[in-house]
Amino acid sequence: MGLRRYSEAERAMEQVLKLDTDCEEAAMDLLNCKVLQLMELHFEEGQSLLLLEKYSTVPAVLAAYADVGRGEIQSLVQPGSPCRSLWVGNVTTELTEKHLWDLFKACGDIESIRVLHERFCAFVNFKSADAAAHAMEKLNGYCIKNTRLVVRYPDRRPQRVIPVPLKTCLPVTQQAGLAAGPRRRGPVNGDECYFWRTTGCHFGDNCHYKHIPDQKGKDRKPWQP
Figure: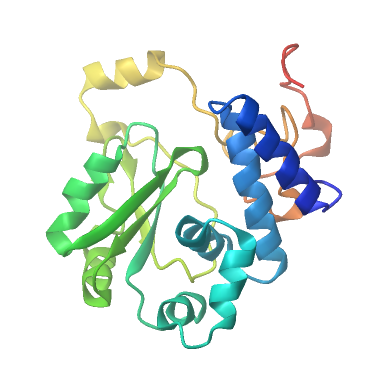
């Protein structure tokens, strides 16, 4: 992947997943590989994730995009146009699909929800653009499960979003429980890239988090490749 030989990288990770269907690292690397290919074609990261959820592969995305009659694709990739989908940031591991469904359904009929905990985000797809616009206006900045949501359209260039615990949102007993729980695999030391400090980050200069040269591989464990 680092050499941009994406087809080879995809085949290798697909083979890993055939041998071990539960290998989360291979599944995430496969997704990242597809996202990088679309980002090199000038799609935004949020657009890429949303399109891959719907079309699964890069060739399928490009085929759909090439068909200019596909209004749904056009509305996704043209900034400012009505969109039925929302990107939701600051989605911590405490937030489940059900939490988001119960929260967003008050704004309109939902078609689907996809949660990507490893990227601290989710996509909420409504049945109408009006419902999506209403949800964004109402729920951007909403406090739930120790985090404050960031809600926007996926065709807007993403800002750096780092999950910041909101201790005032939880009782003291729940705060203690979260503090004692396992550390999630996300940004460390505020805004440093977890993968840069461990196994290596495939996003390179496109990563949303800091890559400090002296910290490369500093937190790599003996069992990590």
